Amino acid sequence: MIWVIIIFFWLSILLYFLLGGADFGAGIIELFTSRRRIKRTRTTLYHAIGPVWEANHMWLIIAIVILFVGFPTIYSVLSVHLHIPLTLMLLGIIARGTAFVFRHYDAVRDSMQDLYNRVFVWSSFVTPFFLGIIAGATLSGRIDPRADSFQNGFLFPWLNFFSIAVGIFTIALCGFLAGVYLVGEAENEADRSSFIRKARNANILAVVIGGFVFLAARIDDVPLVSWVITDPVGLTAVIAASISVVALWLTIRTGNRWVTRGLVVFQVTMILLAISHEHFPDLVLLRSGENLSLLKDHAPARTVEALAWALLTGSILILPALFYLYYSFQKKPARAQGV
Image (spheres, rainbow, N blue to C red):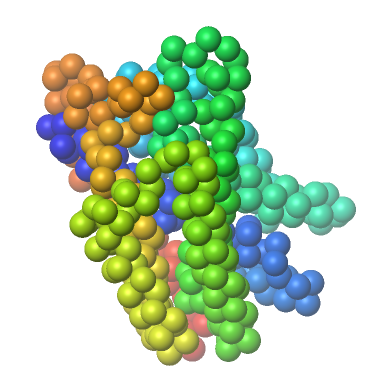
C-alpha cells in the first residue's frame, strides 16, 4: 500500500504545480501587461481562474496531509528546518487569495483596488518563489538535523545559490504555464497574440534561468547534471521535454487549445521527472548523506494501510465532482456561443 500513497503524493505535487502554478502565473502575466490591455487581461484571468482558484490548493493540502500522516519523520524535518520559507509561502497564498477576493467582489470601487492589485501581483511572485526554494532545499543536501547553530539549522538549508535559482526558475515556469493556458481563453486575435507573446518570453526566460540552475548546482555541489544527463530516464525526459517545446510552438497559434495545454503539461512533467528520478525514493537529501526515503521513512504499516484506503476512497468520491467543477466553469456562456 505504500506505493499507493507515493503515487498520490507525487500526483498531488504535480497537479498543484500544473494548476496552482498556472494561477500564480496569472498574477505574473498581469504584472507584464500594459495599462491599455490590463482590463481585458484581468477579465480573461477572472474567467479562467475565478471559479476554481481556491480548489487548486486542495492538491497542496493532500500532499501535506500525506507527509504528516504517512511520512512523519520527513514532515517534521521539513517543517522544522524549512519553517521560514514555508511560512513565507503560506503568507503569500493567504495574501494572494485575500487580494483576489476583495478586488473582484468588493462592492465599493475606490483607491483600495490599487492596493489589492499590487498585493495580488506581488504575492503571485512570492508564493512560487518560496515554493521553488523549498523544492531546491530538499535537493541541496544542506539540511542538517544535527546543526549546532541557528544559521546552519534554519537559514543555510534554503538560503543558498541553488535553492534561490530553483525559486526564480519556478516563477518563470509558472508564467509560462499561465501564458499557454490563457491563449486558449482569449476571445479575439489581439488577446491571443498578446498571451502567445508573453508565453514565448516566459519560455525563453525559463530556459535561460534553467541554465543558471545548473550553474548554481555546480557551485553548491548539487549533482544535478548527473541526475539529468547520466540517468537514462532523466536524459529521455529532457529530450522528450525539448521535443514537446518545439511541437508546442508549431501548434500554439493554429492548434486546438487542449493540444497546446497537453504539450505544456507534458513538458513540465518531464522536467520534474528528469530532476527527481535518479535519487528516487529519496525525498530529502541531508548533509550527512543519510537521506530521507519514501520507502524507508514511512509510518507504521497499519497507518500506511489506513491512509492508502482513505486516499482511494476519497478519490472515488471527490475527483469526479472536482472534474465536473472544472468542466462546468470552462463552458462558455450561451451568448458567447451565439445561441
